[in-house]
Amino acid sequence: MRKLVHHLIEVRAFTGGAFAQTGYLLRCTATGETAIVDPGATAGAMVTALREGGHALGAVFLTHAHIDHVEGLGTIRDFSDAPIFLHPEARPSYDFAPQVSERLGLGPMAPLPPPDRDFTPGTPVQLGERSFEVRFTPGHAPGHVTLYDAECGLALVGDVIFSKSIGRTDLPGGD
Image (cartoon, rainbow, N blue to C red; front, side):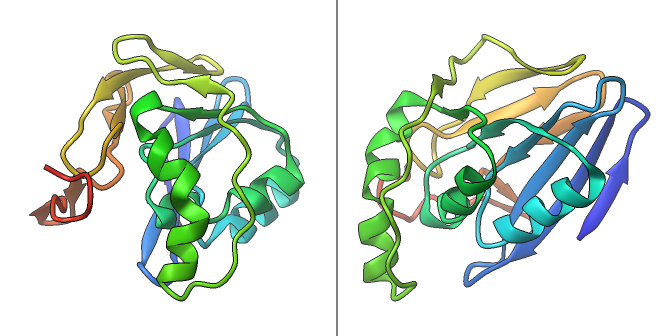
């Protein structure tokens, strides 16, 4: 786990699973409100960090619905009924995730809980005193969004950008 602390927000990165996917635990330092971004295979470690820190979960933000970004939702839902945010165009991939898990040999996966809220580009989402601009950034996947906090200089980009590289556009639905 990597940890970045800005005076306004704490970000913990959790990387793991078959695709070395990174998910994030965010905490507004002013209010303590927390959110998870893209709970993949490391969702159990995220829940452990929440429990150890005594934090309640306020939201789950999904940048897109590829299997490696949603496979931990069952673990998160067992811990909390925090609302799940997803762009409507990502819903077909989201609903198909259990079948993708089987096809990729990742094992059985229960159907995912329905998303509770839609991401609407241009409409910010709040995490305590932090406000994230929702930017529609398709290309890697249908319904892909980037969450941007200008004051903190933080962009949660999902798979639109990789370290020292552009993101992938060769998967189904990519363009």
